[in-house]
Length: 255
Image 1 (cartoon, rainbow, N blue to C red):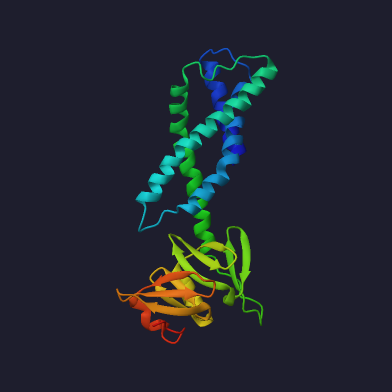
Image 2 (tube, rainbow, N blue to C red; image 1 turned 135 degrees about the vertical axis):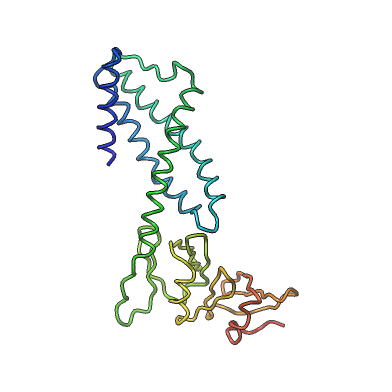
């Protein structure tokens, strides 16, 4: 796809500059488009990481939207620095002059930033769409006798034993699987995973949280009617009074 964009833009630049009567080397339009594409492709995974860190949701579009809009500024600056270094190097080797900042740094930055806002949005939307599709792709049935849970942490398939999962929490369009070792981020809904994990001994203790019963060592009521749940790794999490009845019998209740 990038090669097609480079070819189309470079040929368009070449034809427009020749019609306008500009004096230029034939390879300049190609150099401009290739260097821009190289820098953008190199930074694209960082945009994907930002989309997974601050995913837009139906309930919350404003905050992620503002964050991503703000990230277009460092993206544009990094893009500008990258293409300047690459192009300046080629011009120097060719013994030619590259007047990228002849009109001033501010004017060039503003011009590039306007284009990079659209570029950032297209790349971010692409990552979001692919993550959305991957999250709804049915997981294969585990082999007979294998009770491990398969999750997709990015592009990696991870197999977790239910007893190793301490709790599962909602995080926007994602779900976090907490183990004693690390946290795995999966694009899915908590409701969908609750349907799968209830039979594995998990119980909802909060509107955004599931807990593995086998890892609960104590439940302490609070003055507000909610509960503090202590897990066997020492961490304490909050439970809502709304789901307190579901915890009965799951662990000893502290006085």
